[in-house]
Length: 172
Image (tube, rainbow, N blue to C red; front, side, top):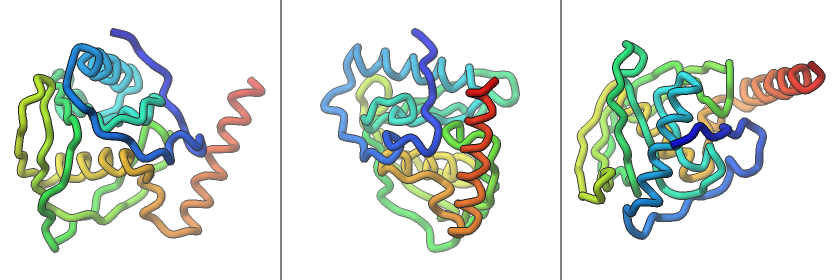
């Protein structure tokens, strides 16, 4: 298990559409472990494989880690099979868009099919932060960042702020 670097916008690899995983094998389980380590190291609650440069349909999440507990979950080939018409608004942030927080509207409730870490098919009904986080991470699998859901003006301001922060970091 190892911590891998997390790509940040506007890295073009974040726009890649991820491919399905054929089988949940030891290689995928190692990827899941590395993703969890990387997510914890960055103090995040969710991470898609594409964010560490691996365009496969794999997500890890741990909503409990903010309270000091560890309860990582893996979602392989996740697919939303139902979404409510009712929406919910959460202020979202992203490890690939550091220090930017914006309100995003998404379906309030979803049903998601996926394979777990053992390759077993699962169906999850989610609402609240879990539904929002799943949708946020699943967007990454399609090459979509949360800032793609906000106004063009707010998005350009966020990207300018990111570029400036990157330049400052690189010049020391």
